[in-house]
Image (cartoon, rainbow, N blue to C red; front, side):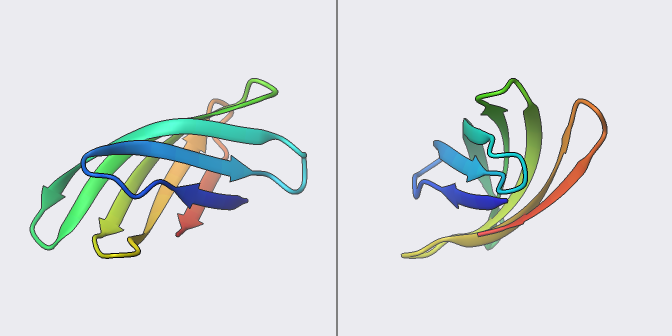
Length: 82
């Protein structure tokens, strides 16, 4: 899936798009500093009803980067990089 995250301090918005199904996702995340990085959690909700719960590891900077994992209600796992 294509994934983007809003640069923010503590909370922000996320967007994703699943090319295979055409489903568009929006959601919010919250994060807190843990040493040199930030850890966060968020929820993406699709325009067709799918929900994906995410856990994020964010490397702060002018252009934050990071990675995360998620799962939906049917147990499908997602790996993200941003």
